[in-house]
Image (tube, rainbow over all chains, first blue to last red):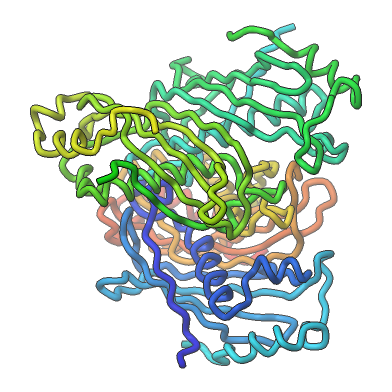
Length: 143
Length: 143
Length: 143
Length: 143
């Protein structure tokens, strides 16, 4: 079973800019969509975690833009957990044109696990089953 | 003293679309900026009201787009309270190119006054001074 | 064959605001998504029309917000052409919670048909087949 | 004369999310605002460059989030060119609470210089004066 998750979505008109291409800031939002869809798939729906008091803010982000995308283009986001300690997590992303497989963009988001007061806590001790699910899906290396 | 408030801002690159113009959805956000700046000016800063438990959600909106605007163009938003009952409020907006005075867009937002549980309440009874400030700035007619 | 088109999508985290609800401006963007999906379905994909020199800007919009929606909620957009003259078009929208069928929001967008220089032109004369498709899907009344 | 440029702006309501904080994706947009304001100040207004056929797309981005910001908070963006070759450019950013000077976020954007067909070209040869202005403002090191 692959630990790399696929998420497919097309570019909306309001996501383009005057250059006629997808504005680069939107990929940060697409990463969030892909990540939340991934987590939902592995039964760690973000809204469920929030109700349990598990907040997973983004603490860092990096992106490399390789090719532009345009309105109505269909992109495939591949994402995987490449680092997970119970305190921190890194998710890697690769974005492809879904038809031609041209690489559009790649990057990472870094995360902390905090409670609803934004205080760090030991996920493994407080929610061992949730910890285990993240660990089960941890690819442990760049793809 | 005019009851019509002026708010000036330029168009950001990320607010344009593939047509080379400001995406029409952004004017709804600009209306919010103009309204919140107006309220702050009359000492009804929105974050202060929220802390008091006064929430003013948008219940309706209408816009007419007359001319397009583009990246870096400087727009002037004129807004005024045209209806206020203590339970409901309507704010009117006119958007001009700040240099040529060409009309770009006009519209209204409708609002309710609710508490932090989204329940309606009598602003006049619970916060008479805040009620009075809104009433003082009520233009009471379209401009 | 129904002339009312259905479009389903969930709310993304970045579309919520400090009130914990979907920011009202986003529905204008969702209307665009629903409309473009509709047009694509009836073989009038917006990017194809743009390449033919048919631009369909929004000239007006109105929305009534009935209930709030939240992160991860799944909404169903029902939309139909309720007025079409070849020069102007009005599209109506109703937005429901996809599970409970609670009405979240309703509204309209008004459109003009212009060429790539934003000049009005006679769609029926220049592109009779495209004119006919719009006319075939014209519900001709509010729903 | 400092080569570090300051840009000040407050957080809009629509830029917050359900966590009650500024959504992390927006800082990418704020970086663009700060950069374009900077360029405008040094007489390299982005729209003017675009008309000359000089396009400066973002080829990479990195951000570290240190503290959250909230609705109505006033942020100060400090930015400087830290690398410039005429073919590539890196801009560094530090974001502070404008009152407390608390560091909110820091990061970089990387850029290429391309013509209106997205082809690289020699800025120094084709536009020596524009090349010189970038070079004059090149801080040449991280700050």
